[in-house]
Length: 366
Image (tube, rainbow, N blue to C red; front, side):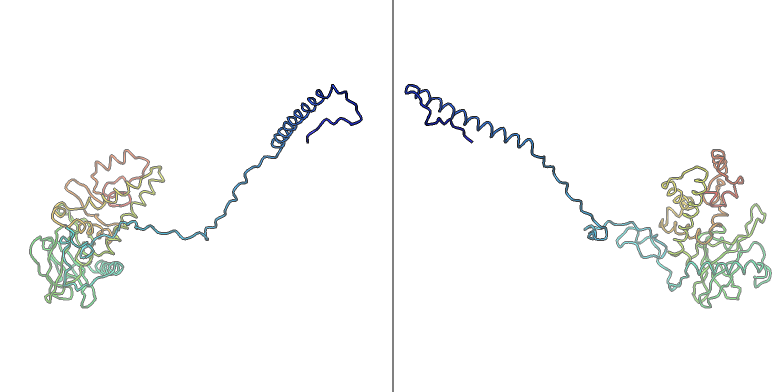
């Protein structure tokens, strides 16, 4: 608001004061205008300073319910997963064009794809062992008396679906070359051929005169050392027809289960075993029983399949009778001096004091 200096008309001003009054009016009007600008500016600043500050409001949170979220889209390129399915004798799962494709021997056509499940094998083997133990070897022979050390083989006759038995002299059973003639308990002539002579763990084939292949199940074998009878072994070898994918997987499971039991016992004693050590131990359980000649001349997965087949069918008795030239025995083929050293280094672990029994016990040996 601009203020002005108004002089009443009744106020008499001398004539000579007119110029002075005119200058005074102009000065008052100029100062009033400046004062008005000052007051407006100050008021604006004050008003700005006293106005409340505007604070930014937080963005409201959005609640997401998991069951309302869109499904996760799979990757455009799926990640391949490694397969643990072993390659077994007679399997045709080897990639075409592989250098190992020709290494697998063909399936024996005389078997006509006849195969028992793992459970059926165990049942037949238990039945054969029970009959063997109830009937002495001499009574089982059709000749009444068998001279020298004899081996009895229980086999399944596919034609009759019955268990039959054949008896051979031990030297014939372990013969590396040629074929041997024998008779079954029912008087049927058979031709026996030894695949690999390896004591109680000797795989063989049995064929009748009509060319029908039998399925060997169990061997009753007298263990003799230094001319002295020790015990009678009942053992399952890798006879043709027993090495199947199911049996191999069962053998792998048995080895892993034994190692896990041993690992748990060590954990109770304050000793932790890392997974990589478990993996090495599982591999050693198979590698330690690989024959050097077979390793140089045969398809390696087939050799390992034989090892796991033995573990599946014999379980705790596997490699019970296996002793190397250096005196190593049992599941891990450890020599006596090494076993004594391990026992002395880990006195808190209750290892069996006897070396032979300690190696025969798979959990103790692991």
